[in-house]
Length: 424
Image (cartoon, rainbow, N blue to C red; front, side, top):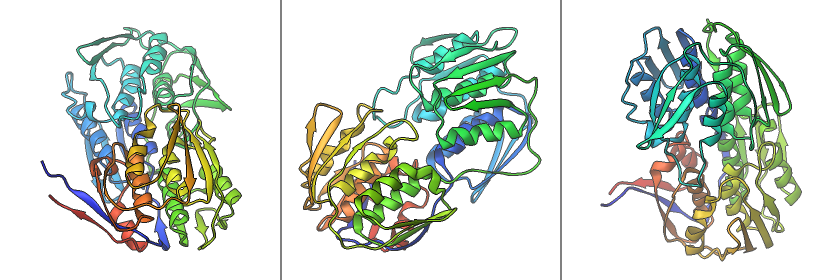
């Protein structure tokens, strides 16, 4: 079967202004948190993405009414939940698991397909389930489905220390704890900006949540109240970082608008250490044009506020343009380097040391070929590499990119890239 692909002309120099969309990773848990509160919910700065569409389909399966107009989203949670929803989209994307915490908080017996998503590692849901079991939920997995039965008298507060600061597990347990009886303590939590956005939204609706570094104190309340006004989703820091690296890779001058520079402090620090000239204001970042040869660098991904794993493929594209040896170590997802084979097909010459660390000596001379993206962020990295290659690259696997970048092709063209989606 012939598939559509993105046609990318290489040796580009991107320049201009680009506006960042609302955060994919912030809106998804907030959407599922709307299950906790009867009434009407109104959000702004909501990106139009495949993952958002799938989450809304799940809410509709439960009986909620939704309507999205451009970047505004209305949710009507005034109805009784469906008893046995089909959840047609649940197995296709990772964030489907985020309905588990809210529905357990509402004493809703649930059968949920195991979540899907990008194939970048095992990404187990064990921590989600272990935490909910601490709150009294009976959970079993039967025929690739999660059967979750909440306690008859409602969730009880828990004291749970996450073995690893998992973003999804932190979000799920927060949403479960806000209505639980008593005071819960969650230790070793993740505290990415997207999690703090969820906490902010829940607190505005009446949740009692206190944070001290990686510990949360959550005092359960009987009821939350829907906001009477709209709630604006934070900007997408991974999209902002991708555009910043696109400018760095092609040595262009790019102004990233409607972003939060504080969310990208680690990336900005690394780029400045290389010698890139960057100016930041409260809601924008300016990367200045340069024709310099920058030296190699070593990067190690980690939990926030360390270097984000969601930007490592894009940073690898930059490493290919640097002079000398660079190294990149991945500590979060064991299959995040699947894209390396595709870069080597272009002539990158990247070498492995074990399964979690790679080396490259640059600058690499890349020659365009047909390549395939196997996950969302790998796709972004491959686009950046293709923009620096000689010739015209054909990039397949566009369904992954549609999950996480709003108006990607339009924004690339606006910055001067010659790209086009070719249908089969």
